[in-house]
Image (tube, rainbow, N blue to C red; front, side, top):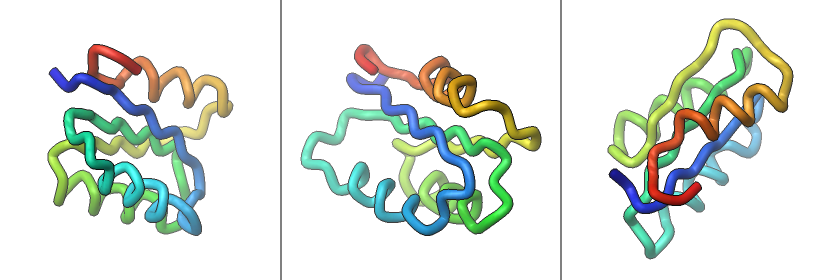
Amino acid sequence: MARIGVGVPTYNGGRYIRECLECLQNQTFEDFDVFISDNGSTDETSDICAEFARTDKRFRHVRYAETIDAASNFSRARDNSIGDYF
């Protein structure tokens, strides 16, 4: 299990999501797991997130078909994060 669990809730964040995930990827501390909860994005967000999940084992991405409210997507990101600390 990873030491730190990071939840990234997102929805149509294609403009910024790559920069966000690159910042996480480039941390000097490497014992973390990132769960990306894609809230049914209709832009390029899902493709970008899937690319990170394919190329870096610390990243997991799920694109949900149905969009839910933001607070519930935050909770979903938290609940699916793996780590001793969130």
